Amino acid sequence: MLLSICASALIGYLLGSFPTAYLFVRWKRHVDIREVGSGNVGTLNSYAVTRSKPVALGVLAGDLLKGALAVVLAREVLAGGFVVESVAGIGAVLGHNFPFSLRFRGGRGLAPAAGAMLVLGWPVVLVWLLLWGIAYLFLKEVNLANGAASLTSLLVFLAGPGVWISGAFGESAPAAWARAFGALLMATILVRLIGPIRDQMRGSGDRRKRNSGV
Image (cartoon, rainbow, N blue to C red; front, side, top):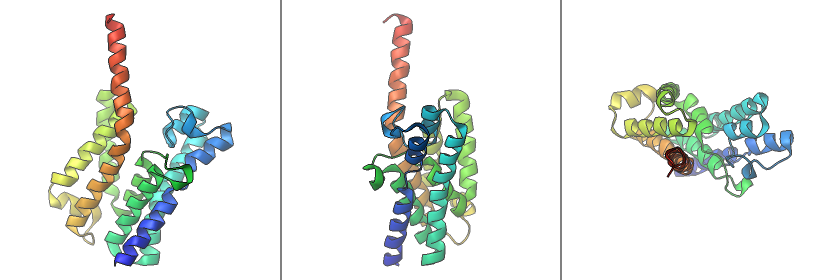
């Protein structure tokens, strides 16, 4: 089992490290996405830099596929069950966020996490999107909504009823591991959201000071 877990983590990390946004933006604009816009290697910055919906959709699809493919490969090649498959999903998110191919400067992990969850427990994605929609309705900012939805999901995984967790991932998933997997995945996303949320809060504070004449 340990060998399968290590192999699945490696598979996930290598797939996650594929620099989808970097390649699309380099092809479209001949620039390094890490040095323009927000510097984030993901869908939103790809669109901000290129102003191309096909590019943004291509990046989103590619990043979703990285997470989904990591889980499917772990399932088909290693046949280790939910634990091995979920480790591959976490590996894909870590690879996306800290890719060796881009000197460990990557994205925030939302798309590959969603791809992995679509295979392992698609209801989680629907709940996250619902939480995101509610948060965005009040906060009116993408990163703040991302953070609010991910933090709420983390708290649900940590303290929510076990029947919810089992219902999301199915009976084949060990309840304790499913809870730990979901919490770890959301925590990994939140780590990469701290910086942009902090910058957003500082920017809002600066705007309030300017508007008040301070």
